[in-house]
Each structure stands twice: as C-alpha cells, then as structure tokens.
Amino acid sequence: MNVTSLDAPIVAVVWFVVLMRENDPSANIFSVANRRDIATGLVLAMTVWLIYCGDRLLDSFRSDAALRSARHRFSRRNWRLLLLVWTTVFGIDAVVATTCLPLAVQMFGVVLAVAVGLYLLWVHAFRRRSAMQWKEPIVGILFAAGVVGASATNAGMMNGGRGVSVGVLLAGLFTLNCWGVSRSESGWPGRVGDESVSAGHIDVRFLYAWAIGLVALSLWGMTTEWLTWTLGAAVVASSFSLMGLVYQTRCLTRGSASRFALLADPALIVPPMLVVGAQLLYRSWMQVR
Image (cartoon, rainbow, N blue to C red):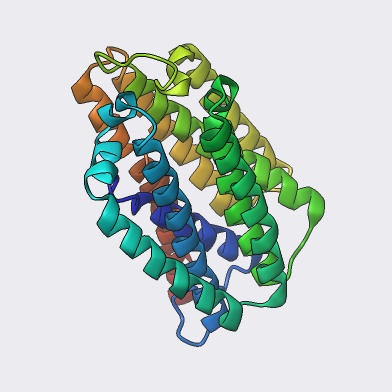
C-alpha cells in the first residue's frame, strides 16, 4: 500500500471516524442511512490519495536521488498508469464533492486546496532547501487540518478553540510519523545531495521527546476533559507505536528503513481501530448488563 499511496487515505479515514465518534458517540460512518458521513469520508480518502500520489509523482522526476525510495521508483516506472488513474479519481472526487457534500465542507475543501496548492508550488516549483527542511511539518499540519476540518464541518460543529487544540495534537502525531519515515530513509546508504530526505538531521532523542510530549498532552487533555477518552487513547497508543518503531531503527540500514516505511502508517491505523473497537465492545457489554 505504501508504494501506491493507499496507506495515507486509510489513515485519514480511520482518524475521521475517530473524530466523528468524538463529536457524536452514536455516529456510525458505515451506516447506509448516514450518507453524508460516507460521502465526506470517501471524498477525504480520494483527496488525500490525489495529493500524496501527485506529490510523489512530482518528487520522482526531481532527481535520481529521490529514486532511492521504493515509492518514488514505483511512481517513476508507472507514471503513465498513475496519471491515468489520478485523472479518473480526480473526476470522481469532484463529482461526489459537488453533489453530495454540505456547503460548509465544500468551502473548507476550497480553502484547503489553496493551501495544498501553495505547498506544492513551494516544494516543487521553487525547490528551495528550506522547503525540504520544513516539508514534514507542513505535511503533518495539512493532513491534520484536512481530517479535523472535514470532521468538524461535516458534523456542523465548529468549536474554534477545541478544534484548534485537537488539530495541533493530531498535527504533532502526523508530523512525528513523517519525521520518522524521512529519518529512516535518510539513513539508506548512498543518500546524497539536497534531495535527500529532509529529516535526516533530526536526532532520535528529539523524536522520543516529541512522542512523550504528545502522550503528556493527550493525558492532560483527557484529565481536563477537552479531549475525549477515545481520541486521547488513540493518540497515546499511536505515539507509543511510532516511538517503538523509531527505537527499532537506531541502526539505520536499508532493511530497517524499509520496515519503518511499511509499518509507520499501520502504527496510525491499528491503534485507533483497536481503541474504537474496545469502546464499542464495552458499550455492548454495558447494554447487555
């Protein structure tokens, strides 16, 4: 899934479901009757895939250094097929978004599209070194903004302060994921030049501290009740999962880097799914009692 950019849409949808359950514990995105949530989740998934696939296609043609990553080599070899699929998905995404989504979600999507366009222009058109150094935090922020914004506008709940707090927390989690993947890939033998992954200079201890900070912020959020147990537990579990993966890549080799790239996104998918599943089982058990 990593080479085809399918892991990122799954991450987005899983956290979208977690946030929808936080806004409304009875929400069920898989309910046929709840077509608005289904349409929003579908558009979110397609949009995330379009952004990630397009970004990787552009990256794959920048220099030979970028081709040291398996996902970039795949994009370079299959760019014609990916471009055809990308165009098709873009058309479907546009139709579903304009016909099935609430106006608030559509307006938010326009704002986010402008932000993503500026990011792509900065990274791929100007090709500044500073753009590469800040690429992971920007991706994390945009990813979190898309998930949180889609959830909030879809549910009609725009609690500014709390929404920003949740967005900052998730941006930190997604940035940790991006930093971990980039740092592991930067340790591959032969990675050279300005096109090398931007997080290669980040010390592992900084990533540990970042993950511990996310855990502490989540625990504080749950105790002060601006963060629900479901979302807080999901962030804590994912943070520990990513921290464990970072620990496994202390000795950076091609093999360990590959494992991290394959497991980094599952570390953002499995923990929240387990948390939501545990919550559903607990509520079912309480109803039986």
